[in-house]
Length: 379
Image (tube, rainbow, N blue to C red):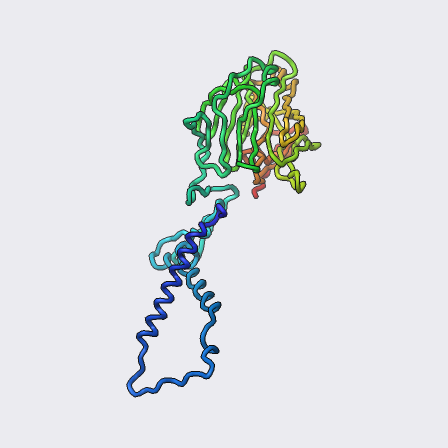
């Protein structure tokens, strides 16, 4: 059963009721038929079969009648709206991204969204809700997420250092989807109990001096590492293992990573090149304009496991002008299927994985004196 349509059993029930009503009406007509006094019955044709409908014709007629009167259908909703003078939902036309109502004047109004507004669960539609809650088992889940987003609770002991974390066994951090369609982002080392705030989970000191943050979105998730203070040693790097059965990861020249289907070769998802920014905020644009690229190496471990080795720019981390905390974003949210993005003069990074869209002139300039004008593109 498709999650975007009403269940088939209810359709069949309505069809059966329509057939019964039609047959009762025909029976009553035949039983109550009479002729005026003195009138002679009409002559019957020689071949009665030539004027009687076939079984297929009767069936088609019954189906058409049932479709026009089925509760939740377009025809039914229009009739009800005219009768009541109020808008009526066309439930058969409701999907995760569309919502249609019949108006009293006989017209239809459809609301379309680029992302899912509803999720089909337990036989009815629920409003998408990414609020994170902890279950009795300690695991964290989004209330109503289209892909069943779930996060780790407290798992093991946090590593004593970044180097110790790199040697630790990976733990599942975030899982999106289920079965062969599941994508799991892991974290090396133990994880503390997360602090939950709406759609955000923060794992404090997942490694010394850095927090791991996961934010639920309508189609997936965002994952950040927030470095609280300047690292005491050079070579700051960490690894994010990704489990994606049936997918092959490939690093691209622009720093992004493509995930292709191992059987068909079709691109299933793209992870844009990661970036990082410090805590400073431009007064005019309100954005974190002090940014830098982040190195990311792809190591295919086989059997659907890929290690993403993330290495923040050492010069940026050591710069006296860098204001901490520094946020490192590998843009794992792009493991979804939507493509809203923006472009900005002076930027060479793919922002399709960002949760915000920029538009207009923020009043800031690039090194060549041009304004950092941005334009948005929506699916």
